[in-house]
Amino acid sequence: MLRIALPSWLLILQSFVPAVLCQEAKSPIPERVLFLGNSITLHAPAPNIGWEGNWGMAASAIDKDFVHVLLQKWKESCGQTPKAMVKNIAEFERKLGDYAIEEQLKEELAFNADVIILAIGENATVPKSDQEKIAFSEAMDRLLEALKRNEEAAIYVRSQFWPDEVKDALMKSATEKAGCVWVDLERIGTDPKNAASAERHFEHAGVAGHPGDKGMQAIADKIWRAVELQNK
Image (cartoon, rainbow, N blue to C red; front, side, top):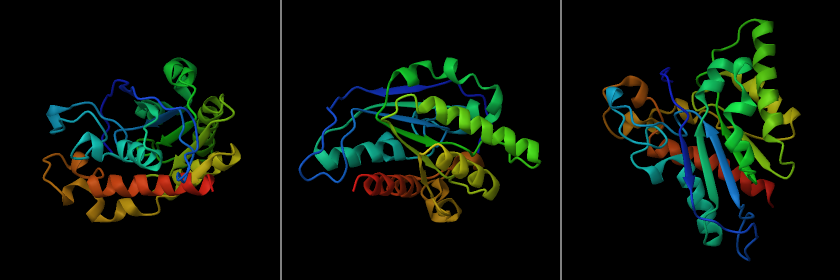
């Protein structure tokens, strides 16, 4: 994962739909969906590393990243797209306990999303000592507690694209303790075919190692399956 300074970038999709269950839909259509993640979710243009997009690195186009693939699935499910907010919170991964959640996520919390997709972990240092593991877990607890302000929100937390047993286990435990839904990406990030380097050339190895269109589709499919299972 790239360790570069990132501003907090926000993308708001302006379409709106009431929260209804269409006759043939497999899941309720939420009014608002909040995506919180890192560069896999949203990365601003960074020409110095060969990245020109303003969406999930390193999808070939905005409609190919997992965020927009998921929104398309909701549209296909009921013919309309929910309003969405997308933010890069890589700073949380790097600061953990020092990240001012209420201040940094003021707009996102006020968005009052019906569905929240949390896609983080890759930038965080692997905790080794018991103290570091406790600090990691407590940071996750605080974040999930803040996101649960809307008691009706369905929160999905996915495992890392590049799996790590320690971090994934801690995130899973925090997710389940908070009563949220854990989405196991299994080992899709270890398959070279899911990396952007399998689809096109990037000079920067960090960019090339991000999910390409196939990897983004795989991430979206895993999350969507979890959404379907929750709404059966």
